[in-house]
Image (cartoon, rainbow, N blue to C red):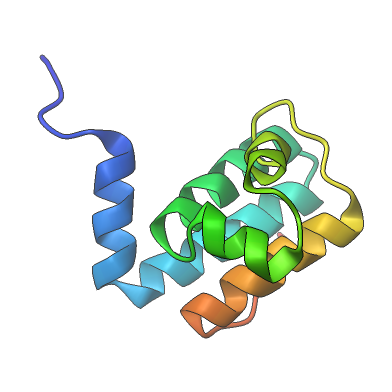
Length: 104
């Protein structure tokens, strides 16, 4: 069965209409990063950036080129802790929340 809607488009529309979903994605990205799954964390964060602040605005906020940010948030990206912190901070400000990580 073919998908009727692009996944990224679905995430964007859900994030824009549901702030709790945006916060849950941000929390999930932080949790994945801390639990040793950085590839997945970067991809979740990339989708969240696309759905909220956008890479051009993020580039302005972080003083990093948008292309570099795209590479950092790819599956094989390697952002520094400073860059990652700046990205999380910019997204947090945009969605108006703080990251909450729950370990089990």
